[in-house]
Image 1 (cartoon, one colour):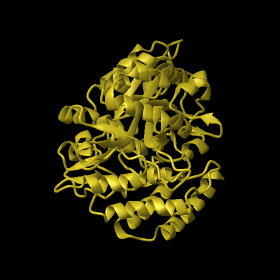
Image 2 (cartoon, rainbow, N blue to C red; image 1 turned 135 degrees about the horizontal axis):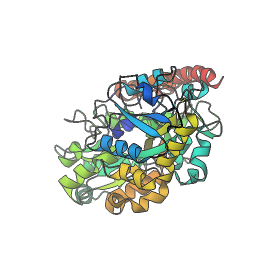
Image 3 (tube, helix red, strand yellow; image 1 turned 30 degrees about the vertical axis):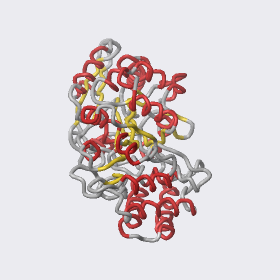
Image 4 (cartoon, rainbow, N blue to C red; image 1 turned 90 degrees about the horizontal axis):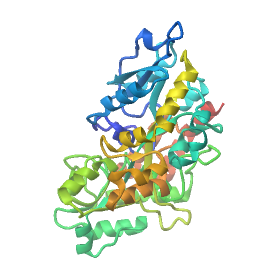
Length: 434
C-alpha cells in the first residue's frame, strides 16, 4: 500500500485499497475510535463462571457482517464472548489499547499483528492454536503472519486484486490476454480506440497501486528472504520505468469518475482492461454478463526470474498478551477460525465477495465454482503474494510511495529514487530487527 489513503467503503476490501504492496502497521483501513471495553468482558467470571472475553472487529461495510460475528460468538459455549464493532480509526485505537489493560482479548488486525506488536510482546504465539491446519491456509497470507518461526494470527478471509478485461473488446482488436508486461503494453496500445483507453490502473496511473506487482513482475520484492533490501536491481529500474512509459503513452485511462477499486470504468466502456479487486465481480457480472475475464498481473518478460502475481490480504485473528484469559482467548480463536469451517465459509461468501483462507474450502464456496471467480480463487493459491513483508514498516512504505509518485508522475530517475528508499529501509530494518 502506498501512503495515499483511498476513500473506499469501510469493509474487507480496505486491506487492499491503499495500493503499492504495503499493508504494514498503521496503513490499513481506518476503523474504530472507541478504545474502551466493558469491565465484564475483561475479567473472568467468579465462582466457576465461564470466562468473559472481548472480541474486536473493525466496522465492515457489508450488510449482515456484524450480525454474523455476533451469532458466531453466541454459539460458543466455553466462554461468554462480547463482540465490539468499532467504527473510526480501528488500527490506531487497537494498537493503543494493547498497551493497557482495557483492550480486547481477541481482535482482528490486517495481515496479522505488526512487527512492533510482536517484538513488544503485545500479542501471543498462535502456532499451537492453528496446529496441523497451517498447511491448509493460503501460503502467502500465512507467511505474512509468521515471524521467527511462529504464527501470530489466524487468517480469516482473503481479498485480492487482479487484472480484469472485456472479452469482446480484446476479441475485436485481435488481442489475447497478456502474459508479460511487454504484451500488456502492446495490448493497451491496440485496445485504445476513440474514447476507450486500453488500461486503467487507477487515476494516478498506478503510482499508488502497482509498485508491488511491478517488483514481483521483475522477480523481486520489497525485502529478500533474509530481510535485507530487495530491489536495488536493474530489473526494478526497468520494471518501474515501464510504469512511467505507460503513464505517458496515452493508453492509460486517467481521471475516471471512480478509482480502481470500483469497476465502473470497465463496465461503462471507458477501458478494456482494469486492475481491480475481486469484490467488484458481482457488479461486473450484473453489467456485462459473461463478457469479462481475469488474469494475474503479468511478469516482466525481460526478467528471467519474473513472476505473475495477485496481491492478497487477510485480517488475522490475534490474542492480546494482556488478556486476563489468554488460554480461553486462544481456544475461542481456534474454535472460530480453525475448527468452524462452516462459519469461515459463511463469513467469506455470504457477505460480499471474498475467498476463504482455507484451500480446502474453495471447492465448497458456491460463489467460486465457475467462470472468472473460479479462476481468481485459483490465482490466489498459485500466484498469491502478500502486499508487503512484515518488516516493511510504515516509514518504509511512505518512502516507497513518494518514490512511486516521483517515478510515474514526475519522470524521476528510478535508480536514484530506489537508492533513496534503500537508505530509509535499511535504517528501519536495523531498528526493527534489533
